[in-house]
Length: 474
Image (cartoon, rainbow, N blue to C red):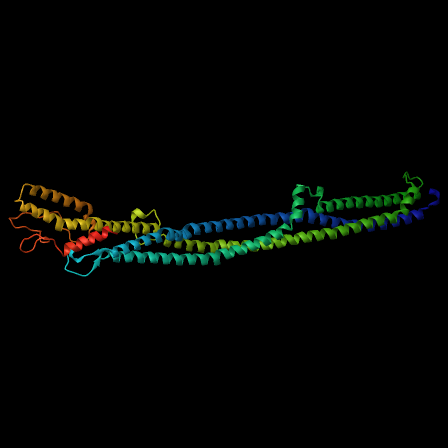
């Protein structure tokens, strides 16, 4: 067969091989650019963009969690420092005020006869007339002011917390859901990159499969291009062999002829592979553009939200914290300034003050009803009769003894109860014990008439005994 093929035929094969090789090289160059672009997009650009947006998302997530923690902390502070004030008002202050009102009502209900007073005023009076009602009214006024201020502060803080803090936080929470939704779209490639551990070409995911297929196509293109190059070289060698009889080139013309016949099929195969490369490029570019768009959208939303969060942290939040601090100072401000009360709240201070008043006034009522009236009757009526009886017994030696006993008794009584009795009340005391001056007596006017005859006093003594009796019957 070698003798039938001349140099002209081989020259034609060489020209065809050269042209085919040129076109194949052009296709392979284009295919290589396509394959390189796909590799660059999927193996380098997309991971870089993904890593960038992941770092941004982590930063955003930290900012959101920090704000969420701050909001929860503010709610706790408002509950413990503001709401607790109103709990204390209802559970501590209001009951104390009710006790004070009840005690004042009791004072108002206890009658004080005019004859027991060191005054010529005969107007009807009660125990309420002998306490500092102006001070009580001032205390109640200050408490009302405090409660009003607390209500205004609570409303102000509630409005500001809702409009400045909670509304912003609600917007952040809503957008946080949107950010999560957008970011979750990157999940498939995140999983593929993580499971690949930096070897994306070995991944079994969409990206890895595409890159592996492209690598196989590239190997086939190289192989086919090598075949075309070898055929072209063999053609040149055959020309040399046929042109020079002394050439030592060894060429199998029959194989060369077969290769020449298959040249178009090889080029068709190369073209088919090139078409597959272009198709893969289109698919890969679609994947890249899809996830790149997800990355861009996530990045834009996250950056926008982080700007809003930064404005919230440097503007709205500090303003509210300043308002909260000033409000808490007002809530802790009490009109009663006493060092012994510095560790307790205004509600507790007012309550303790009221309890002291209630205790004092209750003691006042108790002493008046159970001690004072009986003592007054004793000093003005009972003891004078005893004393007068002793005089009638010719000033026996018992007179001095009972006089001394009475002096001591009155002294002890004054020490025990005297500070609870207003100065306006009449009480003889230890210096007014009846004494014998001559035969004339003093301090017995309540039981003696002008003629010196002892007789029951139908006026003041009867009123006093009736009053004592009515109190005992309560």
